[in-house]
Length: 424
Ligand SMILES: [Fe+2]
Image 1: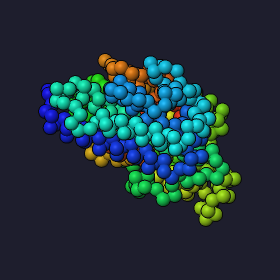
Image 2: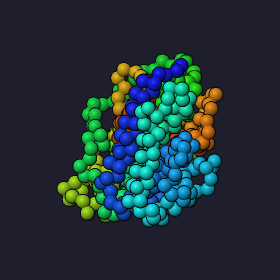
Image 3: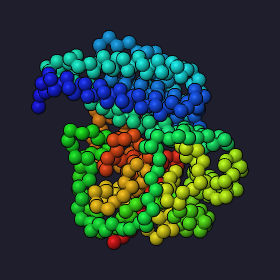
Image 4: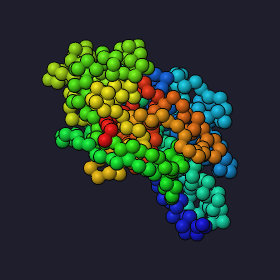
């Protein structure tokens, strides 16, 4: 199929607008944070806000501008080493655990880097720059820009989860934003959960190739055989998880996978990552009026535990132990996907990512993206579990029912929770 000059101009204008929107949203998310906040790295798995702002810019500079914009001059060639994350094909890089040492470049210099790259991308996307005869070149550019924007949206979520982890390590437990944007509020669902019955059979799973975007790990679409099962229509909430805690769930080895139990012992886990027990010494710094019971630290600071809010900041191990305690299990990723389109399903996205019992593996016939982007997903397909849905920190419009998020089983700094499944 070919496109006319008019269609191409409209497409480049739309992409240009989307580019500006996504890029400015990253700065908006960083805006409540001080320069000191934006430099800190609290653990090797988490990156400083400033690094996220620079690395997403590096992606556009390295994968889009350097190969596709004739005459482009890199902002600073040393940034190729500083802000490469894990792309072996693009050479050596600054060690991940040492990203918090980068007091230089300054935040202002990183902002200048973003402006330099944004100006060049806008030049590349300018309507009228590409003639209809250049369709193949335009399609290649469009695909990289769309991938780069989805990449930046993934880092927008990590920016929030990483700064929340850094703040959780600070005894003052600062609020990211005491007056959050409406999109960051959890909606409580007061009704009891019920089970959606699924009769099993052959389900079609994975992304159906069409005009929209998906990551390579969601393809190819294929058949999966499902046994009959039941799926909870909503997420497990904090009130239910508190019962597990108070019933000694974290002290009962029978409920845990062996690796999970070893992690509980080694890490001293006794509740979800950001829960504060009534006797937590940090509670004394908070409002005395809400210091009588459990409290939960989040983007809005410390709040009294809301029994109706979905439980969050769980590892896979904790999700699996809770499911065992509740006489249920975690769904597989294909059970989750097949049930996601059923009438009555609630809280599928916008609250927490939901752990599944599925290893993060390639689909039958999986082919990584061409070029440098081949390293985007495929090489991480070992030792991780799939999460489905989307969280309160996921940018609007970023996720879809076939989307596969993935983390190691002990990871608990994401907005991750669970939905129960059972045999029918
Ligand atoms: Fe990245």
